Each structure stands twice: as structure tokens, then as C-alpha cells.
Length: 278
Image (tube, rainbow, N blue to C red; front, side, top):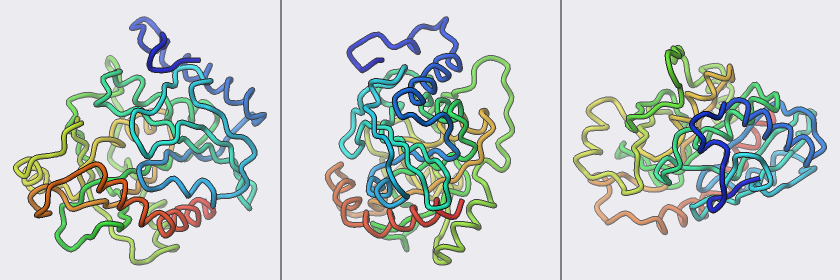
């Protein structure tokens, strides 16, 4: 058990993060009564209602009751873990507790939820976020598939001489499946910045110049950890605003929350249908 004010085993440099994740998975099994999950879903800003639509929630637990998890620092993240069973009988671990890199707790804690999900048995990782759009034709409230990412955090969840191939990190198979649910879905390359400040117009122009279409502060590090764990990955961004220099008005977190609130019914239904097809 841990929170932001107590000792977290992942803060010990000598700790094995995979052993901590295994303990967290044991905690989840004990607290939910579910021994194994098939799919994991991390809910970013604007995606919260999907948890209600995926299937029947059989258990909801406070993330701080699970080894290595802390309290969410950001409005829009619920701080719980749910076990949900879909109509097809798949078990989904819904993660409402996300640690962002900008919180300063280190990469191990950022990716702990992903490693825990893998330790519960999940083979598919669905990562969602709220983000800024670089393409002028996109609009707030639009869901976009992540086709690839650019990690601009200068960090990695991989430790030591650990070499992981990221060629097909965001599964083409799963993106194609998502487009069978909504053929209008567009896709783009996600750039993870360190944050917590929003990107400057010059940084957005840089992201565009190097091939980015979406800018945000999560997801890339988690995706790398998911690949290391052998999971198949699907990524969704909700465009909550156009990025600095594309949008003419100042950016604000309240704008992000409001865009997510307005889009939530539509995107949550989409996400639930995609997960139901997995």
C-alpha cells in the first residue's frame, strides 16, 4: 500500500520493479477476487465514462491499496482500479490511476500500472490520453489513433542493456480493428513532452517538423514498458485543443477538462465498442 506521502517500494533504487509489479498483481487478485485479466485500459483525460460501458464492473478498488500505486495528481483521473467483464467474457483491468512523468516520482512509478497489468495476465494494453492537435483540420473532441510516437522526455523505462524493438509498437492489427468500429478514425504520431508546462509554439513547430501530429505528457513511456512486457498496444488520443501556435487562444487545463467532458459520451462509446471487439 502506498500514496504520495508514504514510502513507495519503487523509490528504492535496489528494488526490482517487476517484483513490485508482481506483488501489485497479487494485491489486485486478492482485492477483486479475479485471478487473471485479459486486457488493460488506462483512462486518460476525457475517457472516464468508458469504464461504465465496457461491461459489468465486478470490483472497484482504491489504487492506493495496491503496492506501488499513488494518488493521482491530476483532475480527470479517478484513482481507482476496476475489474470489468465484457459481454464476450473477457476480463478488463481499468486503470484510473496514472502517474505522470512531470510529477517527479521517476519512470518506474510512471510505468508501474502497465507492468502490473502485464503481471495480472493482460496481453493487450489500451492507452488513452487527452492531447493537443498539430493538424489544423482536427478539432477539439476528436478521437485519433496513435500510429507511432516520439519520446521527447529524455528518459526510458528500460534499465541497463535492455534492447527492445519498437518498429510496430502501436499494433496495426488493433488500429485496423478500431477502424472497423469507426472508419472515420484518423491517426497520427504522438510526441510526449516532459511537461507540466504546455508546449511553446516553437516546440509545436519542432514536433511538426520531426513528424509529430499530437503533443502531450503521457503514453510513450508506458507504451515502451508495455512492449517490454510483451503486450500488444492500442493508443487513442482525444484532441482536447489545438496546440500552441495552431490555436490562437491561450491554453488552459480547464479547457482540456471541458473538451473531455463534452466529448466523453461519444468517445467512451467508441472505446467500449473497440474493447468489446478485442
